[in-house]
Image 1: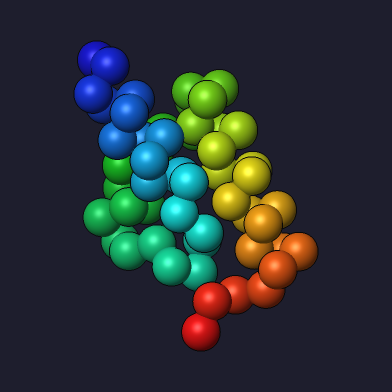
Image 2: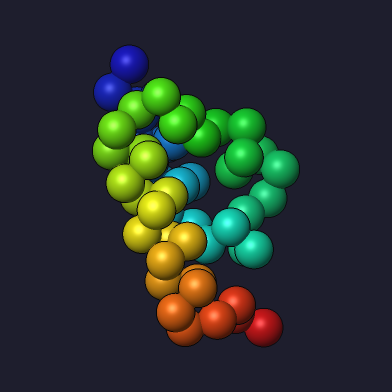
Length: 52
């Protein structure tokens, strides 16, 4: 179970514009730590812009 959460959190830490379909499949927003990682990645992308 821990590896599932670790994979979900790692995928959520990737900025949304750079995520692959596989990254999106792994993300479980039911997990609080995953939601936090997703929020931080989105906030970083919003502040610093998308990577080209």
